[in-house]
Amino acid sequence: MIELVRLTEVPLEEVLALLNEPRNAPHMPLASSFTAETAAAWVAAKDGQWVSNGHGPWAVLVDGEFAGWCGFQREPAGEDFALVLAPPWWGHGSAVLQQALGRGFGELGLGEVLIALPLSRRAERVLSRFGFLPDGEVSYGGAEFRQYRLTRERWSSSERGQGARVLDGGRA
Image (cartoon, rainbow, N blue to C red):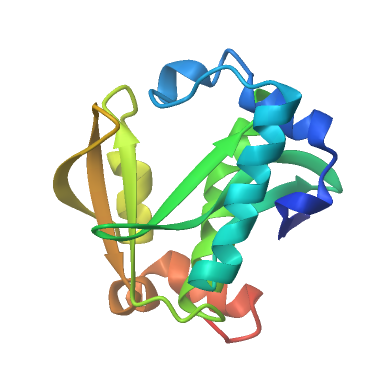
């Protein structure tokens, strides 16, 4: 079972281990090494987005275990979805994305969602199953990313969006 909870509900040591996971580094061009202090500041900043934006990152729990983090972050072009899972949980990405999009378009009321992937990631097939369309390239912190866009209407008409409404009691 996948649960999305606030990052502050997860022990900092577990978040720190994820942030410093070397197998994730090739796909996270903006990441750096974290200490306990910088990880605590990172969690506080991510959690603070809930106050300033009405949404933000969640911790991802799979069967009660911390598996990673995901969520919507405000960027100049719109609401950007990020997902980082620890290697043992990499196979859960589609299920996490489906649940998060259902909540984003449902309870959070988002009109569209962006995903920016580093050039090292090739996820067009997976993202197209959710209804995402290519939306050019963007630069963050000097790194280049491929951007994809999904509207609420496109999500609602996609097979994944239909499935999310069933899972979420019709709220998506």
